[in-house]
Length: 79
Image 1 (cartoon, helix red, strand yellow):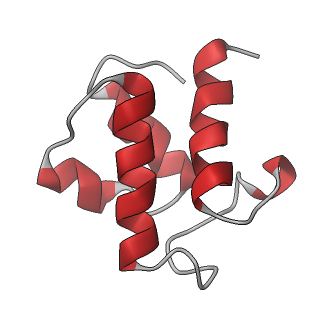
Image 2 (cartoon, rainbow, N blue to C red):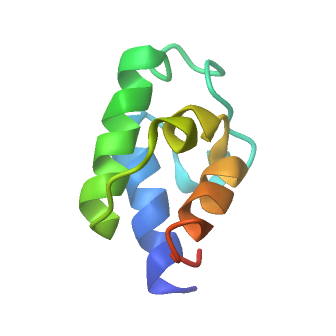
């Protein structure tokens, strides 16, 4: 497993009370903690972890665990 996927998973698991096996299907508002505030906490964690600053369109594009990987590709971060 790549270092980046571990970092990515860690951001989600720190932002939300989920286990690694729950991440693949996780979507925005699937759990009460992934509300607008939780979303911004996740974005902040991703920005800190990967040393990036996301554009607003990219922030709103992270609608699920899978889509977040696609968004990070825009910043040349391969997950």
